Image (cartoon, rainbow, N blue to C red; front, side, top):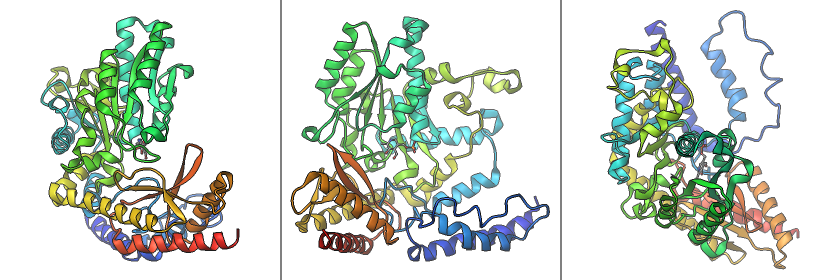
Amino acid sequence: MDAEQLRENAHKMVDFIADYYKNIESLPVLSQVEPGYLRNLIPDSAPNNPELLQDVLDDIQAKIIPGVTNWQSPNYFAYYPSNSSIAGFLGEMLSGGLNIVGFSWVTSPAATELEMIVLDWLAKLLKLPEEFLSGGQGGGVIQGTASEAVLVVLLAARDKVLNRVGKTALEKLVVYTSDQTHSALQKACQIGGIHPENCRVLKTDASTDYALSPELLSETISHDIAVGLIPFFLCATVGTTSSSTVDPLRKLGKIAKTNGMWFHVDAAYAGSACVCPEYRHYIDGVEEADSFNMNAHKWFLTNFDCSALWVKDRNALIRSLSTNPEFLKNKASEANLVVDYKDWQIPLGRRFRSLKLWMVLRLYGSENLQCYIRNHIKLAAHFEGLVKQDQRFEVVTPRIFSLVCFRLLHPNKDEDNANQLNRKLLHDVNSTGKIFISHTVLSSEYILRFAVGAPLTEERHVNAAWKVLQDEASALLKNL
Ligand code: PLP
């Protein structure tokens, strides 16, 4: 590594990235390439001799960028956002530059200690209960994704209950969730050896705006206990993936507690909104939770990946996930003076991810972050208003955060054809390359999702997106 060479090349790369952002609006949001497009554009083996950075950059421009879906485009409204920011990028750059591997405290004390401090900062912004802070038995850890977060807590919960009732009871353990819970939980159950028939995916419907019903949960648990099964894990969501519903945490948490279950709250997307005092009530009841997760990389200006997980009992994680091979032994760990995050996660190696979250919190400050969230919610409300003004469309579920679920009505009120119509509208709209939205299905209805949350999105982009939707809808309806 030659420092001067690094400086020169890194400057070129920063210029390249800055130009990408300068031109991002002119790029199709959803990549329009066909499957396998790259195979013919790239040699089929690695070069023998070094190439010039400029040649690689030219290839990136000509061959890679067309195959990129531009998540940072202001016209990106699909799934949920995955934010980048200058602060997040700088932190990511520094993390890549230092390139440490902080699995144990000793391998880079600053990496562990900064992560603990910054997650305490974020926990305080979210007004999480004291037990989630690192001063006591709990604490925060940065996982790569919400999927890893739910997996590690499920493993901790599983082992906690098995220690109590005996290892042979694995077949009897039951997980509770709703049909709106992210599929990450199902994957965690598969990995965690939970019997496939023991994952209770409780039905939701429009009567509760697709929130998990505490009554249904109670009934199901009672039935399972009566037949000798062991309820052990409940996952509730604040901001479900389909429609941003909020499950009633307090009631659900009390049921979990009464039955000695682990209660996990997945606030992967909507957790960010709860740094605003006016949205904090959506996580009321989090006091009942054993673990809480939010993805700073979704809607909190922190470049991917940065999924913040807090637990009240860190020893539960450590008991499930720790290993202590000779080659990792060191004085600080053996004296039990430090946190070794390798024991809070699946992999051994881990990046210095807290740097970017620290940069985001410091370079923007909590007031700006709150304004950032509020602005997106305001833009979503604006979009919702536009949809409501057009009789041809309907808003399908109440909008809480920055997601609007809506659909085009079929002129003959024909439900089967309404689904086809909306599927076609999604395809046509995304094929323009002007915007990118995604879909879901609720109560057998094909629904369009418009999620505001890209950092560069302004009102003019929302208005332009609505125009694209209206124009494509008019064309479709004309040809019916
Ligand atoms: N939970 C919720 C509510 C989500 O919306 C998502 C993704 O959108 C996930 C979990 C999975 O996130 P990740 O990709 O971080 O695993």
